[in-house]
Every structure is written in structure tokens, then in C-alpha cells.
Length: 239
Image 1 (cartoon, one colour):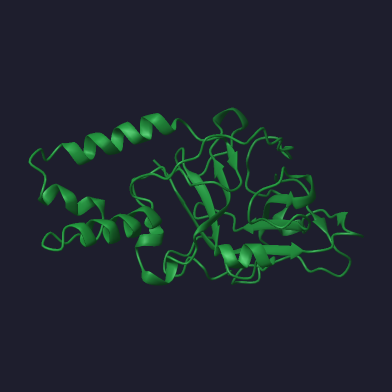
Image 2 (cartoon, helix red, strand yellow; image 1 turned 60 degrees about the vertical axis):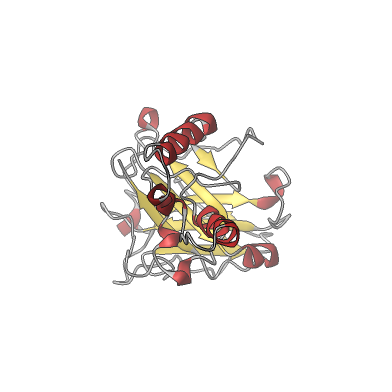
């Protein structure tokens, strides 16, 4: 994470919408990862985001790789560490990186009740079983519950059982800071069903995503399996 990424000869440093160099965030060498279902077995992925308080996020189009970028090298032979351009030397201003990420998984990972995939699956099952009581997701069930506090209590219980997420996560289910999965905002975002990379704030290393927040990178699972990283959804949220 941070520091200098491995770049191929002739590979250009990604730039933001104004021509400014983006900040290197993290790289994943798939060959060094434990086997992950649906992930390529080899290849080098580099993630870049914009500097400043927004980290390159564009809420109007969270899949437009303008303020962020993913560079993929299916064959990283010949890649060498490259320092950031002078304009991006300060990077994200986080602590004294770079940091090596040592993955200790696998670990238990479960979807939260407001995960977009959970909402869709629940609505389908519920509406088939209760055609006269239609819902679009779990948030609608309290209209029919005799105890209005039950859905909230179950959601809190599920969150407590899931426990805290690791600082860095690849694969599995996302753990949201806010009770909101932005893939539910618009139909076009629902196709990003695989969690590619999740980064949590780490106060000990002065890694601050907003105010104790997390970054999320999602990709359609069929693209991930095919090694196609041209279509990625990115956002972050804070406390």
C-alpha cells in the first residue's frame, strides 16, 4: 500500500480529470494471494485514487474511472517500482508508508442485511410467499410486523455476530460504515456483485478515510473471473 507501485515499461502513470497524477493506493499480486474463488490466479492489479478530501470519488458516476483508476497487468514480468510524479509525491498524506499487507485469511464473511444482493433475494422470496404483502427489501417488512422494533433488532444482532472487518479485505462480503449499500441507489450499480478490495481506516498508521471510514472497490464477478478490470465501481464512506 502507498509508496511506489510496480509499473511495466512504457506504462503511463494514471491521471485525473484535470490532468493531475493520481495517488497510488495499493497493489495486489494475485500470484501471492491465497487461492480466492473467482479471482485470477496471476496478474498485477494497481489501484489509484485522487488526493484531497474526496479521494477522487464522483458520487454522480461511481463507475467512471476518472478520479480513480485500476491498472491491470496479466503478465507482470518486467515490472519495476516507479516513484510517483513530482506533483503526487505527497500521496495521500497517510503516516509513514509504504506498508506491506500480509493476508491472514480466510475469515468468516457474511452479508449485512442491507447488502444490495440480500435485499433483492429477500424481496423475491418474500413476495413469492406473501403475494398480498409486497416488499422491495427488508426495510419494508416492518410495515407488516406486529413488533415494529424486530427488524432493527435482528439487523443489530447480525452486525454484532459478524464482528469487525479486517483492516484490508480482498473478496468476501463488504462491511459498510453506514447502513447503506450504494449499489442499491441505481439499477446500473447492481451488477457490481464482487468485492475486489476494501480498506478501513487505521488510526495507528494515520490512514484516515474520511472520519473513520472505508474504501470499497467492486467489480462484476464475470469480469473478475475473466481478468477484465476495465469496469469497476468505487466509493468510500465515513462515520
